[in-house]
Image: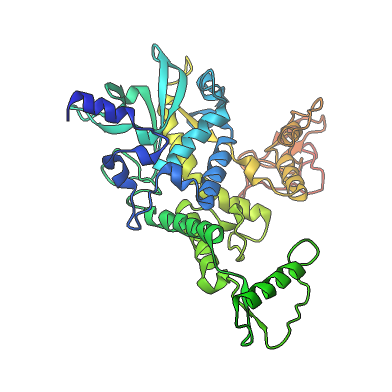
Length: 429
């Protein structure tokens, strides 16, 4: 191929129009049915769009918090600026939504990192199907983002979905190895249904009568029928025929061709691929096995649908987090999504949980108010525990005649309640 021919072909390619793609681009997305399945065309299927929208928006809306863990002590740490403000154009929500869309459609979420020295100052999502990934002569991954432009691992945030052993790219859920044919079948059913209802030439019925012999008689009967039954207010009026004429129905019944059942099954197939319960994309034909209450369904949703995606993001982000000055070398800096908002129970359940937390000394009242987005009150940051509980190592508390608190040797058991009897150390047992 000559240089002029190459540039002429390149100029005719529209990345957003698969019809202009060269054969080597199209072949990986062409299923056995012959229908073209790409990330763009797959989003035409409402089940794919619903699953991608639900997973991407649910993940993007969760706070990504940073922690420092040293020994058994874990503390919150302010998030790096670029995590809260990825770049000058993107909000945090939009950034993670686009990264998740790349993961869900291509199996890879890729962002270009901008650094000043070693510090990350911005991150820009890239459309992962357009990024070529391979290894250089030293075995390190490199990312081709342009004809002669390559990025290294140091310049890229790469989150992989389900991946075959030894591969540098995650598997596309709608690609060769997974569900290309399932998506193509769903698209084919939608296209067939649209074509059927748009171009169907089957009449709703016909009038049959042995006495109708000529075209003039047929046209006269048709004109009378249209005049009596066509137009506003005439629908479903009773028909009266003279002589031996009778009505024969030829109405199209979708159930007879199993078209509706086929499309419903494809919705379940797509939900199975993405791990989304069908009722969350408005497919409620069958009862759900994801729990009987909103709280139970929320727990299942977070555990089995969102958790794997969040783990991938968290573990890819951890090496990029900035270590604050003075952090011990053996301390771990990591990030974690806060899913409390998705696991909130009803009001009664939350109040009962707060009561247990406050009475056991785990939460302060102001901490519980903050979880409900309510303002704090003075003295509300104190932690409380019942007076009749004591640590096993300290033994039961007793008081002297002057009111001084002392302890006795420890006894077996965990938190041991005191007796209701007041013990005076000066009087003896």
